[in-house]
Length: 185
Image (cartoon, rainbow, N blue to C red; front, side, top):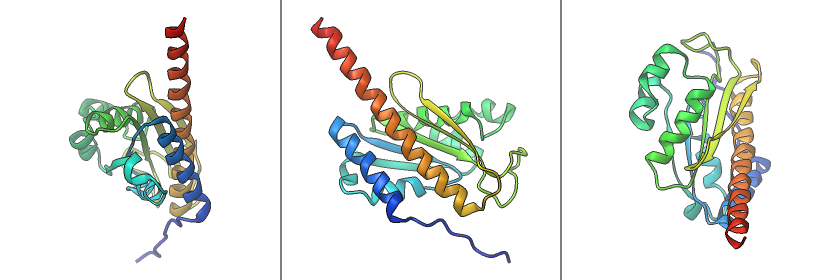
């Protein structure tokens, strides 16, 4: 049996999550997660933050292609003709998480944490993130971390997902401000 590798949840990560939860609270927005290679770690980190009980509506942990289709309505043909680790799937996970929740903003993570390539041949360390609301396209980011270890990949994916989620909240805030200014004429 190989050694067990874990992903630390440390104070800096929880502080980043707390800042994101506070940002969502200030905007009156709620959050949902859709995770694959992090298996719910992002939701767990967000749940550590003060105020998460009202801002975090929940999360989906969807490791397999079949579960992505069942739980998040990721199109089966998208997964069949391609890979589960790509921009289109990350964006579809955001759409599905929003469709199956009451949250305003979703963040998705799909990737390969290791210890080996996935069934589609994607390399260890490839991670796609997406975050957005019900209006407009989700923001996207791709990470090519290499084989830095399963725990390190999952940590970096959660950290980068928090940053992308914060950017999606900022975009939503800016769009709301612009719409308000346009109404005031």
